[in-house]
Length: 570
Image (tube, rainbow, N blue to C red):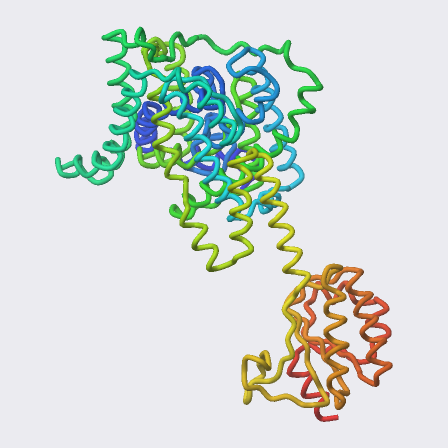
């Protein structure tokens, strides 16, 4: 890979681009644009922004990521989780939908872009590992429920606000008398139709003789059919006069960024939210990108992904939009439509621009209840209650982390849920590493392999005892090893040599070094010699020259077999 490809990954696929790929990408982008337009508008409303902002979010960010990202199939734009997080983060700053609110959303996208770029420069892609699978699973399931409940107000035609289930529930109960019956009827028809299309459209098209790929692709067009049908009916019969809320006028001009609302105080207050939305967006995006890359035997560079997503968010900010990331449903649409390269993302952005400039009048009578129905039917698949059961049988600690994240997100807030989930994950990790598995081992008869004396029938020598620790040695567990060894020695009167088998130790810190020195001194006093075996090269490099090795009562053996052979013959 040359330098240009390293910093501009698009060069890798541009140099091998062909007319056939262009034809496939053009068709894919056309289909994807049709399917993503109502979705993008719906996610803008979910974020508390005007519907047109969703179109802004699908133009420049899509083009920038396609040029600077490393995934050939990931589609970047507004997604449900980051849209909901945007609404939650911005709620304390301004009234949803106001010019001030839009300005804060733009600032959030800008800060998110800056964070992602800085993380790339500092090679901090590893931070995404702080969000363990259970935490992500609990967060996504709870967020999906919150999103669905939050959209329920559009289904019944009432006003409701809140950042958690309790607040949303109370708000809707207070407005229960404002329910609009025509809106409810339209919502029921829309949801029923969407579910019907989702389940039966693809099999029906297959029965009509269409190929499997074509049937799968067209089978995802249910939302488009529902949007076109309901919009036409509302416009033809003036159903908006019955209280059905519609999108209305959509400004078809390029965005005007209200810079007068940009203040240093607001930017400082937004930093925690921007950091969280950056991490969540990055983790979700890379997970999706890697899953598609694995199927196509392609590689993903996490640090370059930070660059691509960072520039996409900066592009969102400078185009008057809100935070974006790579989405699973967007990417599935992209792949199903036949996209072969990121050129599909560039063409999708250009088609979104064309839609913004020339086709927005067609969405005037689009009911917000239908957009809410589309969001709910697509988001419910993210709720996975079975994951808790599976996790509970495998690791009760991680199941607790999932459950804690789930309920805190649901009943307090999304940001607090993430913090609680990460904190619990780190706490459980520290507990686990501070309670390492330590075993006395012996030789399997006729071999050079050593195993736990409690699990296998092994050969041992009373005067030589080998202790294996299956963890790195650091401040949290150093005293545990020290207590174990000294207790073990006190229980064996015939012991002359103690070997510490270090084949699972990859790191020893200063606290552990002091503890090992204390073990050596205490064993000397008891007439026992301390030895080490199978210390890994990088660990030995750190220990060489230390007072532990200089003053060690015994020896450092390359292998455990060598150690026992040498000491048992003395």
